[in-house]
Image (tube, rainbow, N blue to C red):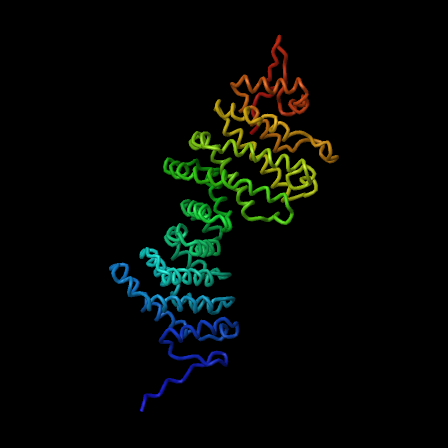
Length: 455
């Protein structure tokens, strides 16, 4: 007579196999945990059993890391690992009790170690990728809205897991690891992240490879914080920023026109467009650093694209009422105004930076008819009765750009002087900018009426 089968365990009125010994039992448990009532009544002993299977199956992965010939024998172990992660992932959905129980078994540490082993294998086996993805999904779910779990995930995962996963060729792995990163961030961990800027760079690189994914703007903010911080960049920092300045600039050149989507109300919160604005902020701060400026001043296509984009948003603002129009700024009273004013002024700021003591760029702006465009960007909109004075921040950067464009450049000085004589440049506007045209014999001279440049 066959030995009697052990009685099934009961989970919230649903019969499940016990003990959990095989793949089918794990799959059944994974399905049960799709229901909230089953998650809420799950005994801690179930998670211990799942963890035991996970540990036992991970030994095969460790062996394959030491001996690559064993990779072909991983199939059954990877199936079990995948189902363990799926089971734990489902158990954590909106259930802090399960999150805490699973965390207290040190399952997070086991999962992170196993995921790092997956990366070490470096094989494109689909079953391995599936296990990899499910492991990251589990870490994301156990950390969701649970500060204690977030802390444990951060301790085990930072920075190795993020450095390992954020540059992975599989876009789902990149997306899931980004989710874990942002789920776990708080003000204290942000400071740690500032000290590991390569992680931010990896996310930027990942987006360049996968432009359809959302931009993690927070990491761009970290780059800005590092550039504008009280402490100057160290000798070790400079090579890091130089090596990635090309990435930031090329990404901006390739996709900056996506900002025009913001002229439509239905795209007012477009993540890519808003992130592209942060890219411009990074470029402005990079070019404010003398060690980075010279590299970006000769970056192919950057100056031309900035002038082209300034012209496009200037025309868009004049054609219809949108966030780039003067009337749009007046009516918005908040974020929209800040986006419009800030983006336009930062384009002009970047032009000014790129032209700083650089005759070639000064001449290039002239050739592209950029000087009249910059001056017109600061003009008062007569169609708007509420606009009595130019926007102060925008005016400040126009003054800065014009000074850098005309410094030791008689051709650009002559152009502005002739524009004023022909009525193409408003004398009162030039005066507000701290400039005036003086006639000396047969020549028109543009000179400054201020002793110090804007700060």
